[in-house]
Length: 453
Image (cartoon, rainbow, N blue to C red):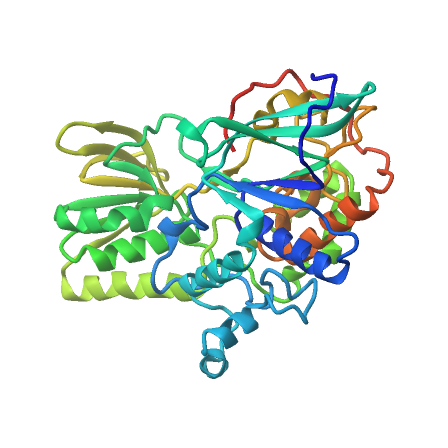
């Protein structure tokens, strides 16, 4: 650790990552500063992409959001904000048409355009092309007062490493693709997050068979998109369920996404937290919108009637082995009820197998040594989303995306607007005294340096 303060411009807040969560936070900062110009929050956000982008490879033309447009970047925090989705529609001259559409669930491409519209209005707070490589604590008189966030500066010669000093950092680097342990991505094997980047070239190659692994919404969307985009190919879907399971979006179940449910979840015992996550996984994980399930069933049934089977649903099955050659990927599939196996020759294999949370300690590098962790090695996150740290740390580390401490909404849009308001309030007014931990904690293990954001 450094023991002296070098001459630096100090920011009240440095955000690492600039997806929807930190975009919502940048808006909250902008609105706070407009209300209190005499006491502004100095904030900057570092994003390794060259421009704003949110899962561009999954922006299927006709795919809709699975969350109401009212759960946008601001409305649940401030319904009067002019950064709302409705204000975006007004600026795009589509407000009346959207109202006539009679839907709560916009197209995903439209919501992405809304995000870009909002990001452009706070672009002065963002440094794009800035890849964070390390976070270092800065000590003053024996206490950690700041963090230096080191990043590759796209405007510096040879993208030299630059640092920015922060009283608080807010980590929102999003999720990363999850693949089976033995899967190796290649030109023929990839995660569905790349779907829209790959489908054009795949169509030009005139494939005979494409295989999709996964039973959730993204898996079903990938199957539907490939079945449409590759009219001469067989599209094989493999999942261990007997059929696609519908998402539970009933009104009572949806209360798990209410802001007050975060209070309940955070204050619960570990046993109750696990119980709630297990009970309500079918609101978000490995489930599919009923309209899409029915669409895929209609396609499969229509092909049975016509005798030309292109949609091949391999339910109650799993991939046991995959081998790639110069010509194809050979995938062995096991039908679970009988144990019978079959090997398919595929031109491409797409894993729609979900996502993993970001490695917060890996990103923090040296700074992870000041953080506490629970008995499972996870960060201890207080109600205001601040990581609990060892004594003598005055600088704050906040994280957006901690499901184990704050429940299902931690990685979803549902409470983003409220969450960023709580983080900003904590930064401005100070973190409240943490409640007694419900789990054993310890300082983090030595961290690996040099992990990018």
